[in-house]
Amino acid sequence: MRFERANGTTYREMEIALPRELDAGQRIELVREFVRQEIGDRHAYQWATHNPQAADGGEQPHAHLMFSERQCDGIERDPEQYFRRYNAKHPERGGARKGYGPHAGQTLTAAERKTDLMALRGRWEAACNAHLERAGLAERIDMRSHAERQTGQAPERKQLPSAWRGEGRAQVIEFRTARAEVAQAAVELRRVVPDAGAEVLSLEAERQRRQQAQEQQRGLEGLIQRMRAEVGEKALAEAEALRQQLAQERERREREREAQRERLAAELRQEQEQRRIERMSAAELRVEIERQRPAPLAELVERAPAVIEAAQAARVLVGQAKAAQAREDQARREAREWREAHPLRAKAHDAGLVRSSYLDERAQVIEQAQEQYLEVAPQAMRAREATDWARNAAAVRIAQALEPAQERIRALEQRMATLEHAEREKQVQAQQERQAEGEARLLVRELRGMAALLSCRGHGWTEGGKKLQALHDPAVKEVRTLVEGLAALPQEAQRDYVAEKLVGRLAKDPANRLRLSEQMAQVKHGPEHDRDHGMSR
Image (cartoon, rainbow, N blue to C red):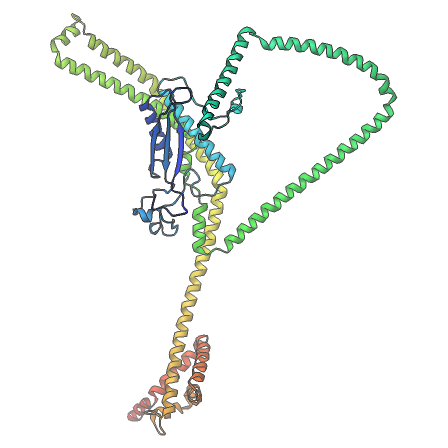
């Protein structure tokens, strides 16, 4: 896909062998149902079936299922945005989230990945066998190994495509022919010697009898030697017992050390994970929570093998009941249409004068369909009840298994809430500090303006001027000190340096800012207030 990221996984593919016993339509229906079960509307997918010739000359039907791991979450995206990186905080701004299966988006161990694969193979086995049963076939598939089934057969090595090129194809066919001949020879042996086990047991009994006699003879000869070496043997036995005791003690200590190493390693991993979590910000922690959050319980319950098997069995029985009803309805409709088209023959049939084979066949179909429905309907009801029971049991089991993960998620969410609160307080404090610095800079700017007017003897700042008189008022002593100090500095760089220091001091002292602000207002308006007081007097 040209929109997927350069280092991203374009798609996943499953190559699935299909039963030879099903015809083409039945195979397509099997693949379609399995895709609906495993993929549904959660992923974009495409599949196709092939049917080349196998090595034995028969059919080799199989299907290729290709799907994107990106989940369809209902958010409208164009192709370019759809394949972007997932945004956990704002999903609508990023691409679709990746993840497939019961543990979508989680990092799994090798054992967990093997368990998921075995569960997937089990779901395919259940679906395939259900379709074979529905088709009325006795054949079944089994995903277990020869060892698990105790068949006694050795597994055949996987044949790569390169093994079938050139002379390799003839070698593979020769090997399989030889294996078939060995199996046929075993059948012939069972035919010639029906009870080969009894024959072997008889020969074994004779061999044991002779061996026992020889051992008795050797025992008599060695009795004297053992009696002579009794003292030495006792010492050797004691030494051997001591050696075994020491070996057992070493093994016990080694097991204890190994258990301690594993415990320390687990504690170290837990400590490293805790330090990693503690270094995260609230946004990073939110992404981590989404990564660790398990799939919804309802989805995990529906993917449980017992639930899938029970639901599949219920669907098969419900389908058989519906098919029986459909056959009954169709037979009744055909009989009704025939009666409308042949009213006289229908009356003769009903009167028993001339029987209609067509109506008799429809009546037989109706009776068989009713019998089948009465037989299958209770089974379908019990299958539904079994499915509900399997869902409830799976929900309890999965909920218990997810409790540690949920507890871990709750702890992370609580820490995230604490971090968000601290970050909000830090933002408020930073805003207050910026506001205080702004007020301090405004005061210092006005002080520098007064100092500049005082230096250049501006309007009102000459001898006898109103501004200068207001500045010499004892009530504004602090403002006078600052203004005269700034005006006395000869260089602009010195005034800038002093102004910055003054800004830093005023930003940290709100009371001092308020006091200077009031004094500066008095300097600005002092003479006018004096004139107003004089007029009032």
